[in-house]
Length: 167
Image 1 (cartoon, rainbow, N blue to C red):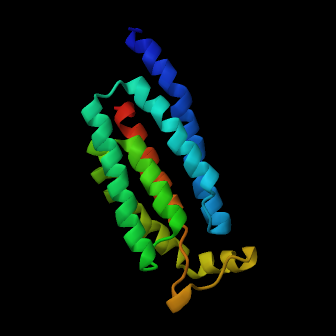
Image 2: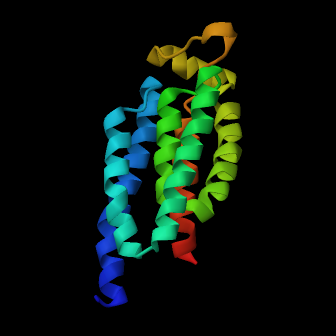
């Protein structure tokens, strides 16, 4: 069995990729109101490397997978009602894998908190002016203003994953 320091170094690569992919998803969502599937797929494919470095039990892996499926199902229900975008649902489910079952409640709470901040920021007149200049202004069906919720998901995921490591 490798020494803990070796495991920690092995986990640096997937964690760095996780951070880069989350930031990429947030930037893409701000620019185009779209989270590319390839970013979500990459997050899901990198997760086993992260999980292997942590050495979870079979029960912990099962709980994590069940939690991610439940988050996806809840998100799909919100998507069906037009309350959240499909990319947001997939990104949140992938983030749930990385967070693990025990941290999913924190991930969801932080996502809601940051989502409120992002919504408030994007509903200001200055933000609407910037969106109009970028060509991303407009409304959804029912007069709703589109909000790049991927920013909130990414911020919550990064904080959930990295804050415990910072102490």
